[in-house]
Image (tube, rainbow, N blue to C red):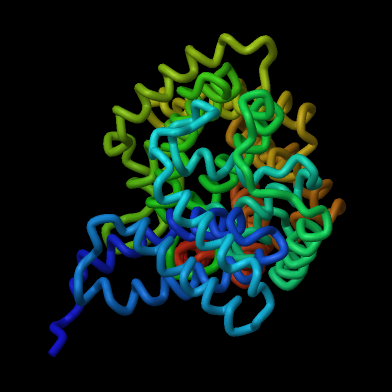
Amino acid sequence: MRTEPDTKVQQTLNRLFRREAGRLVAALTHKLGTHNLALAEDTAQEALLAASRTWPYDGVPDNPSAWLHTVAFRKAVDLLRHQKVAAEAVPALVAAAEADVHKPSGEISTGINDAELRLLFLCCQNALADKDRLALTLNIAFGFSAREIAQLFYTRAPAMSARLTRIKKHIQTLDLTFDMPTSGQIAPRVASVQKIIYLAFSLGYSPGPGPVAVRTDVALEALRLAESLSETTEAAGGHSHALAALLCFQASRLGSRTGEDGSFIPLALQDRQHWDQRLIARGFFHLQKAQTAQEIGRYHLEAGIAALHAGAASAEDTDWPRIETYYQTLWDMTASPVVALNHTVAIAMAGDNEKALAKLDWLAADGCLGGNIYFLTARAEILHRLGRQDEAREAFKKARFADGSDVNLAYLDLRLSSLP
């Protein structure tokens, strides 16, 4: 008779599955061929499901990764046999699996020793359009759903789901291989890998709709990958260090973004004594290393902004005029609506609420952020600062019905109740 499942094992499973899902799909696709990408995804999920049913009771195997790969591959071979689609291919597949098992574990031609980081480089297919490459890698390597990825691209989940399906069919058409790029092919993929790590951290820092306000494990894994990237000879450089600096500064506040009761705590109200000083110190270390870049990029500017927050004793003591200047430069560089929104907040915090509201009106006319919870909340807060309480109340109500985490929505309820 089975005993009750071990809760610690279940927690280990949750962390392990996110890490292993992408590696499983990539490894299976490499062995089965890109025309069997859907089969690779299905059998990877079946292996993870099998583990979730047995490991909480029987314990985690000594080598969980090998267990998952073996189970998934056997399921794939069995399906191919039953479908009679690849009778001649099955022996070759089995031989490939055996060769992979006997390959020395240290045999890495690229010099990238981090398995998860190698997976990002492996998935970043240069033959794909930039957004397709990012969406595919976030889906395969991190296991993010279409809904999660959609919020990064400001689109709807069904549209992103259709896009992912289209990308995977396109891969089959192009007959792309999920092989690790050689040393000379690493450099062209570095910028994409940096962007993927940046986006993955964003999904951990602000997950969006649902009961969780912060997914610390996702954010910290992205931070680990950023630091690993900055230490990799073929990918190291000022921009990688700037990214690592940014994520260190941001991660230092993870534990302060929610209270003991799970309530959301905005930046201005966070207890800065609880910010992780070790991470802040690492952030400044990477920021110094980032100066080796020949030109400043967006990660330098964002890290600089985060450093000003980290170095300020309070929200009031923050150098908001300087942050506003950084955001203006960042806006000129990227033309990102999210950067424009953050620039607006900096303008308001620097004391010019009328100018901030005018910029929000301009952003609203553009239409990109009209239903975004952070845009609507910023508008409500600025109207409140201007003393336009009736308009602020209506703006908070509108934000309350936007897509956001349950914790964010609960915070908006508190703000509404606190208005005069």
